[in-house]
Image 1: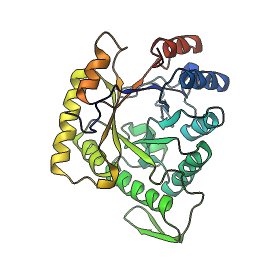
Image 2: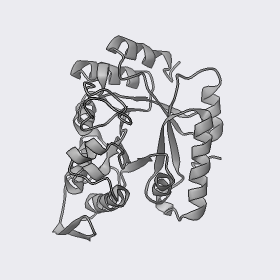
Image 3: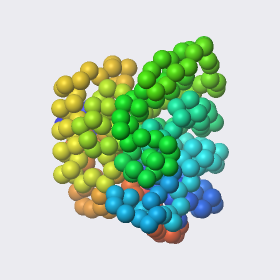
Length: 287
């Protein structure tokens, strides 16, 4: 079932533009430009502010893994690219101060000419949450409120907000984003994430999903869409997926039949620049 109404081949994107072999400043530029020249729709960062040391489940990467800050990386790339979209995959929203993040993202959208795709999630690594002075409890409620407060700062002047976690009164933040409503994508595989995507976001992002798990995810999203109201202004729910494996014969068609709008391909954080560039070329949309 397609929640987005898309009947076309999914857009292709590249994940991990700020990590590992792509995390070197000059390599980051070369990979982003190669992706733009090859016809990819967007490049996406990965994000963990800190990683547990030593690595222990469910930490996804060893502590020596380099991850350049999302806003720094995407702002850097905005100045050396012209059309490719710039995605955060994903910002762990409860860990951030919402007014400060709203300013950073609005500025990124401003300098990039409206190319930001704001991917967000609620987090799952307790050591990281603790390092960011963020309680694990009620992080979902905190994320929902932060997003509402940020949107108010993006849209309104002389605005006020009174919530449980965020309060401000009679303030204005400029510049506003170029986008009238910053394109927002919710990550996560839980029922709560599905509801958040349906109620609050333009899209949903599933990470490391094969066609079978993607089908189950989309069924969960459809169930959430039946249960919860979706604001008309958000439009059809867009589906983004990072595949669990390299694309094989028939995979692109399988994801398309499920209604996936964007495949965010992952070369691998452990790969060197040359391997990443070869991967970008292998799956180039222009081919």
